[in-house]
Length: 247
Image 1 (spheres, rainbow, N blue to C red):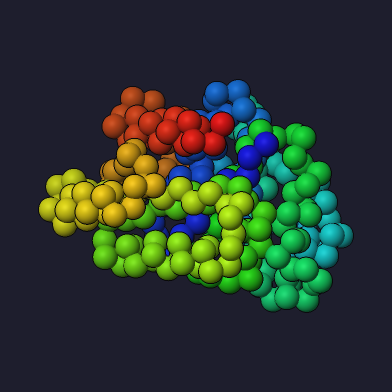
Image 2: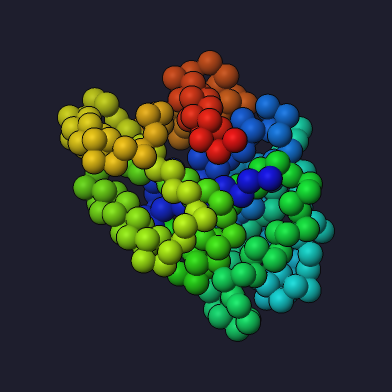
């Protein structure tokens, strides 16, 4: 079982679309897959047509008064389940801060599910916080989408420095380009430069495309409504490249 967190310090870079689409592809390849929507905005929950509501909210969850397997919802897709978001997740940092060993809480909650799933995707909110620290302790892979802009370059450097300073050697950082527009000269130049400077960046690139934006309208993973498209092919290539690294 692998726990993969889609994470970036910066928001609006394609974390949720990455989690949803890769989880769907994993499930289609007969891997038992779970998405945990940790963002209080509940975008993953919305895409899977599931109400973002957790009975008892974040307090009972983190306190261990609710077990995760009782909160899991089936999606419309075989082998793919969801742990929905809850608006109370906006206070997860505060709730974690009241517990002993707060960075170990998510790992402890997920432990009973390790035999049930092949992959667990954590759809994470942005920023560095106590919740982020718990996510880093829990995950094995940190999948980080980066838009080819100067601000994204800066956040990648910040993230690498944080992981190094905190000696999170168990955590494999996998960055890749997201929302890339090859019609823009700056995007092309930054991708070329960054690929030379950071050779760990994957070769697969997710484009900035209207069919991906349609996920909010269709409320389902991209490949479920656009089986033959450049964007679907890009996610397929990304998933295959990730599998080669982690399996």
